[in-house]
Image 1 (cartoon, rainbow, N blue to C red):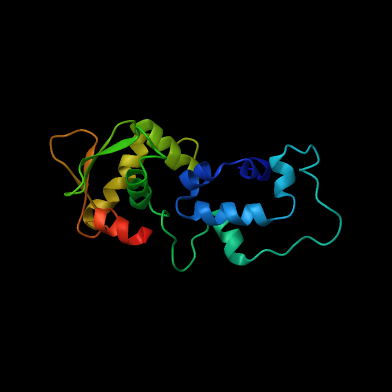
Image 2: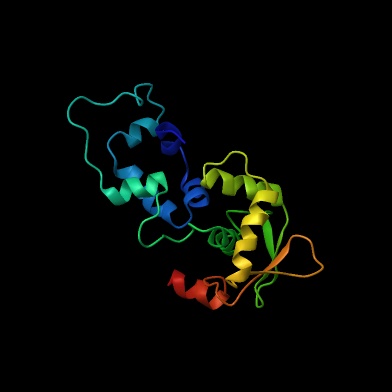
Length: 174
């Protein structure tokens, strides 16, 4: 994603791509010089102003480039990405749904669309559901995700996953 595209993203789009970091990124973009100009469609938005470029923090660049820091932010891992889709249905309508929220059972409704979103986040335009589901299998041994036997596209959060239970979600929003 280039800078002009990033500047034109709505808050909801940034949340979708960057998860919970979308709010922080939106605020930082709003504060940057020239952000208001590129939102207005100024034809000169691609040109840099004269003088020394503004120094931005390492954390800012790491966030933009998707580099993993010592402590990975929420939404970095595939299972967290899936969890975030499920706990924010207003932003991701029709992609996935809870089959049994209390037990952590969920179903992919539009599996290829979820795979494409994951591919966008990871900058992999060739992402398919087949590849995404292969990546999900790595979470079985770690008991983060479980397969629901006999049901296609249905999975369950395991005992080592967190942040999906209703009480956890409510606590994190307070």
